[in-house]
Amino acid sequence: MEVWMTTPACAAVRYCYRIPGKDQGGGSPGDLPEKAPEDQISDEDEELILCRQCDRPITRPAERMEMAGAHKHTFANPHGIVFEIGCFRAAFGCGYSGPTTGEFTWFQGYRWKVAVCGSCTSHLGWLFLSTGGDAFHGLILDRLKSSE
Ligand SMILES: [Zn+2]
Image (tube, rainbow, N blue to C red; front, side):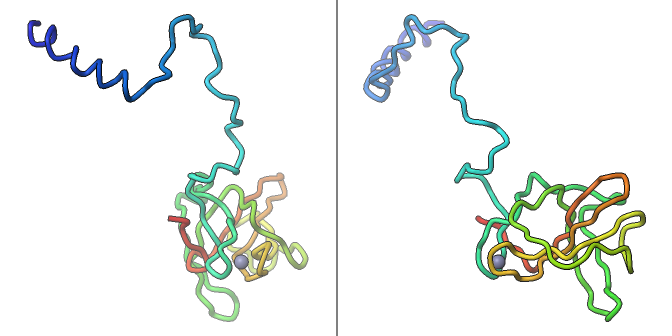
């Protein structure tokens, strides 16, 4: 108790210098702190996942999801080329190319479309679409990089 009686006085003085405009006197607790919309992608501090080729933001870690029990999947296409893909709910930086097809699909019940970088058009993966209206992206992990 007595320790607390003496030391905070010093600390309080320092605080006064560090936070000059601290006037919470008549502030109502119900004031909105800020009106920034939560689901926007404009926040520059936010970690993003970028196109490795051109640095365009493609998606973000928060969009990672699991399909068939895993985020990462390794598949080979009919030409024997192996891709390691990660599943993402959304990939706002992607563009799409070509028709939607169900041929050689990697996910049962899903048709797919080629997903490319919306800026440099590198092939980044695929958009998978179910007949029930679900959609997700399978993005080739070594064609992406983190913004960190
Ligand atoms: Zn790109």
